[in-house]
Amino acid sequence: MYSEIRDFLKAHNVKLIAVSKTRSVAQIMHLYDQGQRAFGENRVQELMEKQPQLPGDIEWHLIGHLQKNKVKYIAPFIHLIHSADDLELIQTIQKEAYKNDRTIRILLQFHIADEQTKFGLAESDIETIMAARETGQLPNILFCGVMGMATLTDDKDKIRSEFRHLKTIFENLKSRYFCDDVHFREISMGMSGDYEIAMEEGATMVRLGTVLF
Image 1 (tube, rainbow, N blue to C red):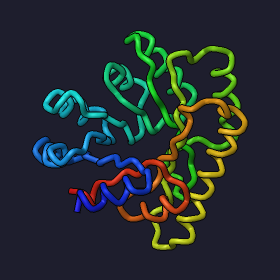
Image 2: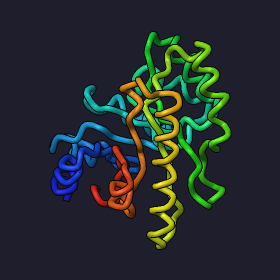
Image 3: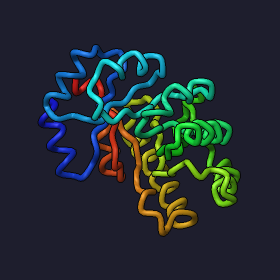
Image 4: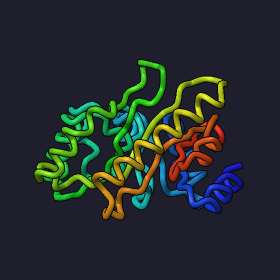
């Protein structure tokens, strides 16, 4: 199943993030041995337990909600933070990136679902974040795109509408703030139950766990 999904996504230029939360080191190595290198974790504590036990060329993606006091633990090695959903969090990432002499790549997570339990920025939040960027307050942050989670529902039209909304947010940001920035190109959306819809609506990254393991 893994190789079929991997090849399908590759043919459509979509990057596969294998969601390894709750999975064992042995299960992760099984995919690693088949060529998978990008893995996503939801919790910093679980990531910190696994990272030293696994090969150094793995790209670790933090895809779950990130608390400011946990940033320091992943700052030395994290490849991409998908869940930058607050200016104070982004400022904390900047501080820890500077301490580690790194540039940390982030995605801006937007709230696109009906469920209030999901995290994410409102579109009105973007002005203050971009003001901080444009005034040089975030020199160690590389903005790489957007992330969003659709409503947990069987209504495919609703899911499609939410993914389409995220694509529109991305396009607006790209044209207004990042038109000449080649790094701002990622749309991380779609999980095991809805990734095909996400791809149809413009996803460049999908976060898959259940269908892989």
